[in-house]
Amino acid sequence: MGPLNIVNKMVIPLEDKKAWIFNGDMFDVTMQHSKWVAKLGAKGYDFLILLNRAINFISKKMGKGPISMSKKIKNGVKSAVKFINDFEQIAADIAIENGYDYVICGHIHQPEKFNRT
Image (cartoon, rainbow, N blue to C red; front, top):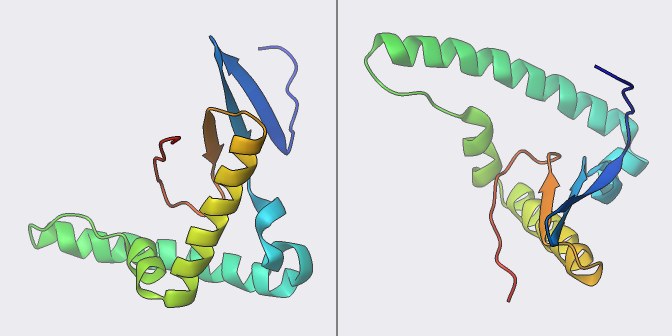
């Protein structure tokens, strides 16, 4: 398979365009300054995933489709929505400043497609 390197960010040339790929921790103030909050959030998120599996099992038995609890919670909490919007704007601004055509960031797990204007 060859050598494997773990890096915080990567720029991949795609024909005449560039894709910027990164985790996103660099933009998360909680990750940088309040490690205990980040750890608590990670534990809560893990629990939410387990709970979501149980709910989706029940939902499937009732003939309904899957439910994304994390998406519902993120979309339902104003501060989370503001954080996501700020996060996306900062990443997009930096990408534009550096001439990147695509940004792939997995930190907030909220897919979004932006077009350059």
